[in-house]
Length: 163
Image 1 (cartoon, rainbow, N blue to C red):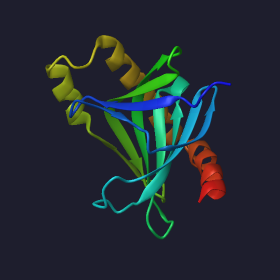
Image 2: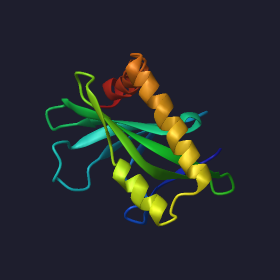
Image 3: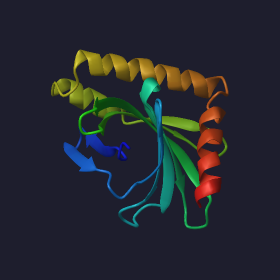
């Protein structure tokens, strides 16, 4: 029987690699990995949440929840996934652009300045920039067309079972 995968988050700014060993793995199937997590510090308006890594879409959709079990917002990271089958290890590299979607479905795109900084410092390859822009475009088109709800409904199904 295959053991649970090991998950890492790589950030470019600041440069760090963090093992997500405190996250609870809820699903690892096909192109989706779902986790439940708690914040590491209490400096945020949220205390815990759920994340779904859509490996084939290069996005991670997270539901940020406060202590009253109220959704604060949905946070979408554009990611690049590397998988090492020998060690069953996933490394999710944050490609910097993020989209925050509020419960009323208003949204904002953030951290585009970090893409410019990373590009100036040659931290992003042409391949990474291409993945970033195509994935961000696809995510925004899902938001514009009302299709983002499929992501919220999918994660909500895990929230209901695991709260």
